[in-house]
Length: 119
Image 1 (cartoon, helix red, strand yellow):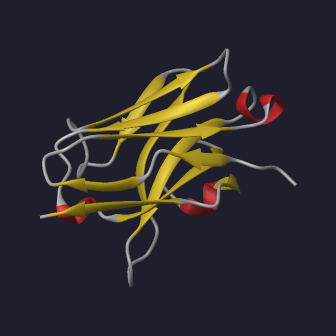
Image 2 (image 1 turned 120 degrees about the vertical axis):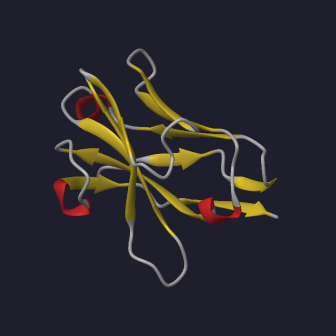
């Protein structure tokens, strides 16, 4: 079973920053695009950002505040989050698969890491 392992979640005040990291098996990392999704209580899972060999793509809600990056030597993909808002509170999931904005386009998922932004 493929395991994507997220880390870096936590509690932060509005306006603060957090950095999430996701480690993937090498054969998955080298073959697929990587992405971050999030799911708030009572809401559907939504696209946050993705990265492929051609660069990063962002949801409008996070554009300019979040940055996705990948380290090909470490097989990790990071999400740097700045100027966090209470509306960013959610469980954040790492995913690997075909690059897109829909959850069904990704075959592999992590267990999720909680991000809570207090006002």
